[in-house]
Length: 113
Image 1 (tube, rainbow, N blue to C red):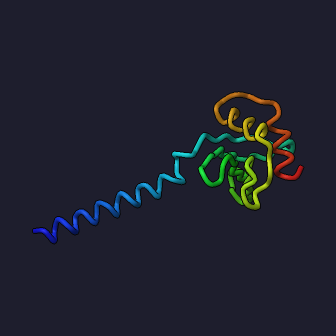
Image 2: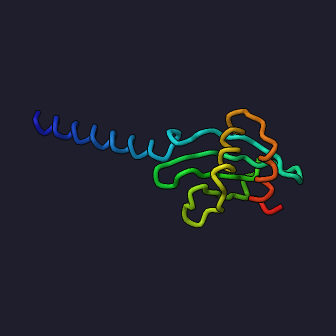
Image 3: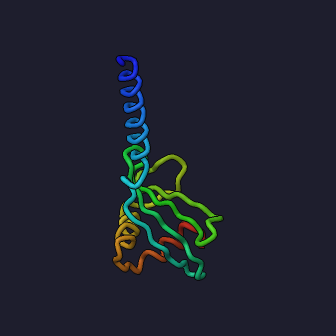
């Protein structure tokens, strides 16, 4: 009986640990996403994120094929493309439904147009 309770407790702790690990980099830090066109009419999906260790960053994918992938950081994270806080804010607002005319110009710059 005591051994069974011990094993059950150990299982619960392991499950809770997995749950906590999975939420550290899941939707908890997901702030929104949007699909935008660059000036060549190619579509890009932009996911806006913020985490404790990466700071504010964007995940950018060619859409709908996802063949091209870019990362951009407003907080100088690793080898991500560098953007300003204002540029990150433009995508944050755009993902929230606010139309900002600067988004296309910033996107063009990031994807190399």
